[in-house]
Length: 167
Image 1 (tube, one colour):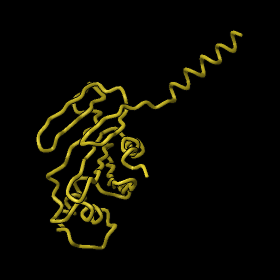
Image 2 (image 1 turned 180 degrees about the horizontal axis):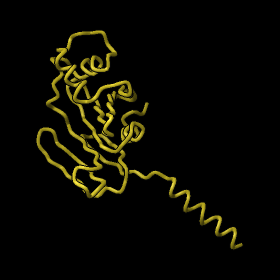
Image 3 (image 1 turned 60 degrees about the vertical axis):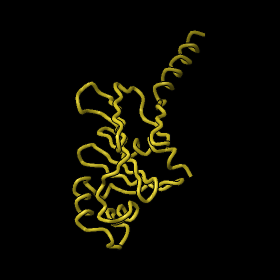
Image 4 (image 1 turned 120 degrees about the horizontal axis):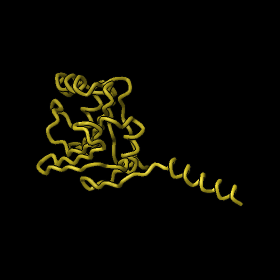
């Protein structure tokens, strides 16, 4: 009987360790699922409506941030056309090349960058060599939400966006 109880207790402990818990965050009318164990939350209203979550007590380390982006220079294009050109998914040259090249340089666009499609939204993501990842959730042709983190990998960022990518 003791062995049975010990086995059940161990299974319960191991099962709870393997379970990934998330926090549901509503931002810009949408739901996102971020890792738990947030140390601090910060928000600044205004046009971009910044919302940040810290996971470390060290300044500038381990964060997830949401921003309603309004000042991204797209070279005269709407967001879908711009991101298609950035990722070289389109041969269209309608956006100013300087804006496209600048974005590629700033956001370290490479072979691991891409697009997730699902539901009503597209998400363009750009993981960097420095451990950072940027995701741009297109709300429509002129509005996006930028989500960035310095500790999530591509799989974890996609999990944050799971509700937006449901079919």
